[in-house]
Image (cartoon, helix red, strand yellow):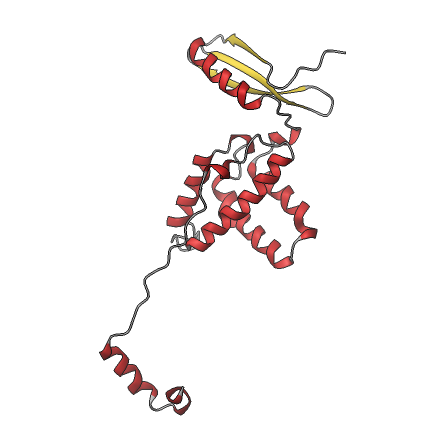
Length: 205
């Protein structure tokens, strides 16, 4: 039997097209075969620097075959796993968040390639044009809810050996932003009072 290659073990080669390719072991399949992460660069020096950073990041990490999942696939599995442990109303809200606000924008991206910048871009998109029916932006509370759910789901992915780190930890939770309240002028208030004087219930109230 071949010796099991430890996570963080890497190798470098020059491709036929002139570019340099590096790969490191980031985990193992159930049968013991290694799972590789591939890195590319135009020069050997550039690749060496990238490879060194990746080796440090993945040293001691043991990813599973589920690391090949897309974000959408992981979220679908995660929802099935937590369904018995949360309220039906919470599950419905999470399912709607995944279906309407995450999958359409980044559901097909491999979960191991999701970065903090990707998630921030998602939040910005949702805030400006997240409503697919009207094209309007979502409320800040809704975007904050997306962040909270993603943080929980990706945290579980890290715990399960699907990703190395939780990219939501690179970001601050989106802030609440309240729209300015419209206050009636004296003229508008007087007009309002005139209208309800004919209704004894509302006028007394």
